[in-house]
Image (cartoon, rainbow, N blue to C red; front, side, top):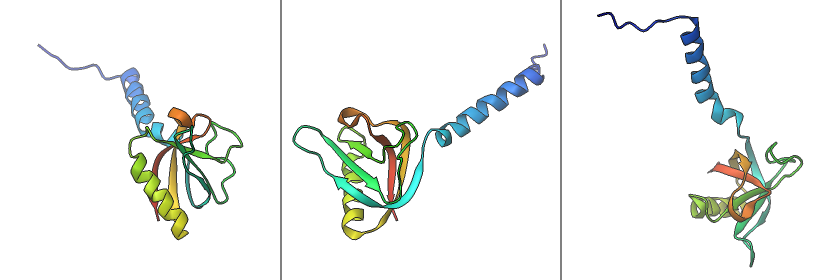
Length: 121
């Protein structure tokens, strides 16, 4: 019995669309910046979030037009490590690579750009 899968333009096109969606998805939904921290605000008495801006960045993510602030909620995985990197960068005057999630930050940080990862340069 011949069990060959029919290969035609439909199946080839479907494979190309699936591959491009999987590979391009993360690139299309985030922004990446390399800059020093301009302003830094730790959590306050009623909002468990860290906020910061970067030098020369007027808009953290297109999801929130004209908002330069990034938000890091305590509920985010890696919060303590990211907070430590932010403090080290601010105190040492180092630059960071900051990549956004392409979405609003979760938890109590709603209204600010979400952070996917931070790398100290």
